[in-house]
Every structure is written in structure tokens, then in C-alpha cells.
Length: 390
Image (cartoon, rainbow, N blue to C red; front, side, top):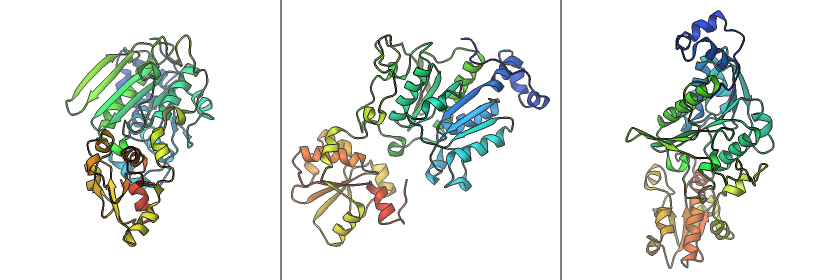
């Protein structure tokens, strides 16, 4: 493919010294490095994938690097988000990341977008850049990034991580498929756990993040064969990479010839946070952590059920609870273990999985069952802050 950007007019003497290992590669050389200097790349997210991506974009000499991130640094981030450190806890991630980028390369212009990326600002922000790197971790934002990139004609490099598995691709509707060609519809709510629910091997972020930057460099300089029309699948436990062909979908809702998505939509509604059944089940059947505390103190006859996974249960639990994973309840395998005479009280990490378990329990006949709003994190925040959060 042709280079995405034109070369800058020149490199300074200091820049020549800094990028000398690039300059002696014939495929990159002065021309390629000048293109990197003239490039403007936006990284959506400064978390697990954004951390290595931002650091290698800076080291490579990308002239303008945008950081779109609204969150603050939490101690649980440090296992994988290597752009932040212990002293950054509580700081905006965008500021912490920008400081690290400038430390790596003072010749880089860093632009901070310390805001939630949404339908109101995504076009304005994306228009400032040649290329987008998507490091987001939720489906609603992924679909919004894709649709905005397609409507603006921008290429973007996508990555995804979960436990020991990673995926990466380049989506560019002008040259090949978009994200919707690969995933026309989001998975049903609750089917795919987030990294916060299922975990992720920290170093996996570096593996996928480095692929994303490699693809960005290839696109910007016009070298190599980018992952346009290909999905790279990485299994860290097997140490294996597979490349899967992805074809442009002629019926794609956003990049097909008869596209039905011609403007940004309500992505939260499109992806959903819980199923309709769960949303209906929690109405009138939700208690707060403080209400649960009161029930326990007054000796109310309840069966407190943790619906998370065993590994999460080992980290922290509400005292007096027992473990029945949500999957066993929803599949019906554990319905016989649910109480018939005592009131069932379900909780999870933050309230989504317990809502799904509640819906399944009510469908099985447990009409007086309830779930705890905010889950074990709500219990920690409102009742017992001495317990570890994760």
C-alpha cells in the first residue's frame, strides 16, 4: 500500500542520531523516518494495550501522538499498564502517559484528550489524526471507533486481549473490511467477560500492543504487508500465531454498498450491558450493600450466593457467602443447589453477572430472590474498606 503520510522536510542532527537504527534499514531509511515524524496517531486508551503502544510510538519517532483517556491510575492497573508507575496512582492516565511519552522522546508532540470518547466528540478528535490505534476494552466503544473511522475514511489498528489470548487486525473500509465485517453483532450481554472479570496475563498486552505499533509503522511508511483483511490470533500458552483471512462483507451495515448505519448510533443500547431478562429481573429485586449489611446483622434468613468464578472468590468475598458460578446457574446445572425455603441473595463483582443469575433463578421459580447492587466492590466501598478490591 502507498504510505499514509507525506515525509517531513528534514530530520535534525539529533534526530538522525536517535533514529539511526531505523535509518540504516533500507525499507525505512530517511524517507520512512521523515514520514513517521510527519505522522499524527491517536491512541484510544492508555491502559493495557495503550501503554506499550504509546511507548513504542514515541520511541519510533511518530511526530504527533494523541492520547484519548479519561480514567485515573489504579493500583490494579500496574500489573500490565507499564506506562504508569506507583507514584501515578490517582493521577489521570492521560497525564501520566503523556509524561512517560515525553521522557522517552522529547521530540514528540503529545496531545491529551482527557475526556470520555463519545458520539459528540469522536469525529472532532479523529479528524486531527492520520491513524487510530484502538486500545479499548468494551464493545460499545469498539463499535463507535469503527463506525467513526469508516465514516471518516480513517484506517485504524485494533487489538483485543483476554487471559492468555490476543487478537489484532487493521480495519480500513477504503482498502478492506471493517470491524463490523468481522463481528456484525456484539455478543449477547454477559457472554464475554471483560478483563476486569476474567483477568489478563500482563505481558500479553505487550505482545498485542507491539503488533499494533508494527502495523501502524507499516501503514504510515508504506512498507510491508499490513494486516488489512487478516486477523492475527495469538495464544500465549501455546506460543502460537494464526492468521485468519477476513473478507469484506457486502452486506456490512456500515461499509457495505447498501449501508444502513450512515451516522453514529446509541452504542450502549446496541451492545447492551445486561440482557432484557436481567434488566426486568432486577426491578424491585435489588438491594444495596448497606441493606445487605442490615439484613445480616438482624439475622435475616438468607442464602448469600457469590456467582463469580472460583479464582475471584479466593481473592475476596462477602463473609458468610457460598460460591455458585453464574454459568452453572444460567445453564441449569446448579439450579438444584439454590435455596427453596431461604431467600437467595446473589452478588458478583459489580452487579452484572448477579443480575443474569437472578433472572435465571426467577425463571426457575425463586420469586423472592434478590441481587446486590454494585457487588463485592460495592460492599468494599460502602461497608468494609479493609477488604482488597481487584
